[in-house]
Length: 226
Image (cartoon, rainbow, N blue to C red):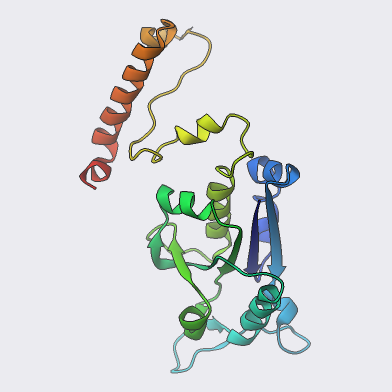
């Protein structure tokens, strides 16, 4: 089983995406534990302050180190974490190999940034891995955390009934997935490729491999270059 602890200033943003579909199924099956923690619970004063002005006069507010440190220490006193992850646009690009690696761990902590950014000392001394879901900026790290958790959870053993389904997803073998079809065999004059109706498993696999390669060459040639 894998346990994921998420630190955020807006836990409501994570409640819905992680409380439905595959993440919910994973938790119901006991394959995954997902715990969402409100950083404001460790905030300063009656207003539970978690941000302050930036030194140097830069615009925007910065997440303070004290409440983040206090929450992290509280969790670390309960268990050891394999990775403490910060979601940030300048982190390592999230890829399927990265997701596969994270899915084998036991305990993961995720910090969602907010405001203009977080006190850099958090990144220097408390974070073990920084991940980006793309070259753009979101209002906070919550949506990125939901993406990361969903990608990891769905390939944890026992979560998806047909585990071979996850293993044939795009990027698992360095290629995009081939096209898939279902009934009816013909709709509006558009037919399913005959090879998929042939029952010849060997030929079908060969066709799927060929299609995967063609789609990758056409849509993501950079993947083949790697």
